[in-house]
Length: 440
Image 1 (cartoon, rainbow, N blue to C red):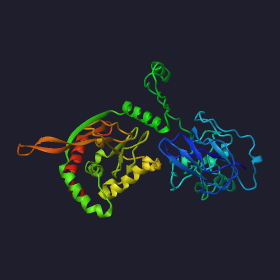
Image 2: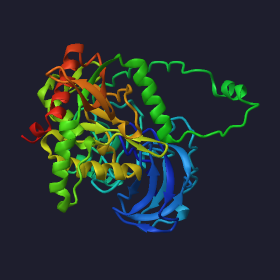
Image 3: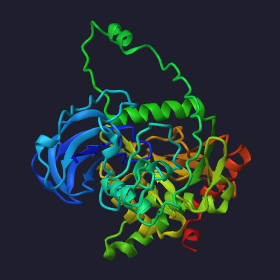
Image 4: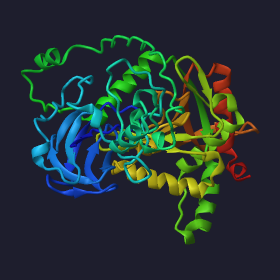
């Protein structure tokens, strides 16, 4: 029977995307693992692979279509022996349809691409099967065939695939006695009304109707940045801590290291030292290595540090996992790789999601100091300014000229109190002012 290929959820938060480009056409044969199309999310352009083999019978969503909802049909896959005549009446979904819109025959939904290939990622973790009577069940065709052969009720099986989809591994080892009992459904919490964010688009347009301007449509990334940072400023109780950090010892040490590393093609930046200093500080002040999780605080063990990377039209915050355990040269190499792929929008979701702490460095633009907005659910973000020459009073009371960098730590007061935030910032300062200790 013809199978609907659904718009995949390529990250846990993805609700819709743009079908950027089809790499197959109607009549093409595909096998498991073949790339069928490119999908643009709010953060990246990712490849979508076929899970089952067959023939592309009909393309339902044209390339370039924006706002395609997750789980909407985008194409029809024909199995061996089937033809276009078997498809019947299938209409393309409207990109701006409600997110509750259901496919014409969701009982034959295919499993979205997953795995470790570029653009393939696990989405929402498996959840218990809290389904209402008559609610559609998402399962791959192979999982359905195995379940039917074994007499299993898919309504009682939790899916481990993306977006809770039932896949082969969920059913192949089960018998009718193994399938879990269906749980009672739980009511979803009511969504809070969106706060007002200013005058409407029409009102603003009327203000400037006699002025020349360019109307720039928001892409997915810009919409996400606007929504997340508006939410962050409105819902996170920020407070700010500021310190000046003397950089001369670090700059001298960096110069010595770079001379030694030059034959290996490695050049350390000041930002590499800042990443390392923050990662170590999170280990030195472990209570500050935490995130806000709605009704609780999650205290992390590893230091996973996010770094803001500016790209055309927005920004990414790729995460350096276990940064406290990595050498400066390893951090430098990884950061260059992540930043390069971020600018090409080729990061996989697991490379820019997570972390407990972020760094935003505008020093290269000559900015002395600024306040950064916390990226939820992080507990804090460090805003880094430029190193500038300033007169300072030394221990003997004499005036010297030193290279001083001003930093501001924006802190979520729900996660970190004032004294704890001050302790974290002091640890960062000490690490940067005694850089050789970071190699110990």
